[in-house]
Length: 259
Image 1 (spheres, rainbow, N blue to C red):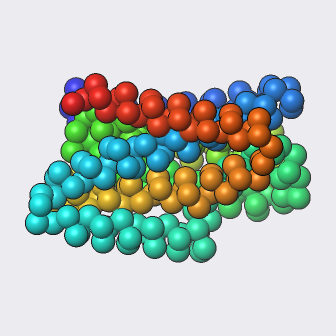
Image 2 (cartoon, helix red, strand yellow; image 1 turned 180 degrees about the vertical axis):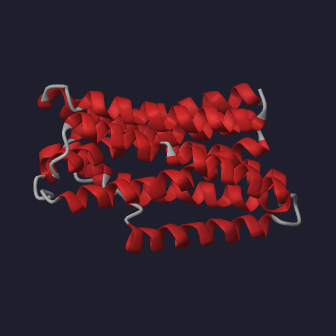
C-alpha cells in the first residue's frame, strides 16, 4: 500500500466513521447515550496521551537524531501555543464534555448561523488533523495508523456535540449528519496537502510530529481531563481511570506490534 493511498484511506475512514458513529449515538435513548459517552471520553483521553507520549514524541526524537532533540521540544511548545491561539480565535476546541452531559445542553444555539460556524470550525479542525496524520504516515505506516485511531477516538464525542448544535440550529438529523460527514472529509484534503508539503521538506518532519503530539496533548489536557474532573464520585472516578488505562493500553499494544 502506497503512503499516499494509506493517508487518503485513513483520513477518509476517520472523517466518515466518526461522523456516522456520532450520528448513530443521537438515535440512542438519552439515558444509554449519557452512560456511554463519559467512558468514550475517558478512553479517548488515554488514547491521545498514549499516542502523543508513547508513539509520536519517541518517533520524532528518533527521526531528529541526537543533535536535534531540542528542536522537537521547541516544536511541542510551538504546537501548544498554536492550538491555544486557534482555540481563542478559531474555535479549535469543540467542548467534548458538553456532549457528555447531554446534547440538550446546546439548546441555546437556535440560530442557523451557529450551526454553520461549527461546521466551518470543524472543517478547519479536521483539515489540520489530516496534515498531522500525513506527517505520521510519512515516518512509519504503523505510526500513521495509531495516530489516525487516536484522532478518531476523540473525534466521536466531538462530532456528537457538533451534530447536537446543528440539530438545535434547525438542521434535520439527516442534514446535520451529511454536513458533519462533509466537514470530516476535509481531513482528506489536509492529508494530501501534508503529504506533498512535508515530503518536499523531510528535514521538518520530526518537528511536524512534535506539533502533532502537541495537538493530541492539548486536546487531552486542556479539554478532556478538566471535563472528567467534573465527576467526583468514587464510582465515576474508578471508571475514568479504567477507561483511560484501556486507551493507553491499546496504544501500547499497537506500538509493541510495530517494534
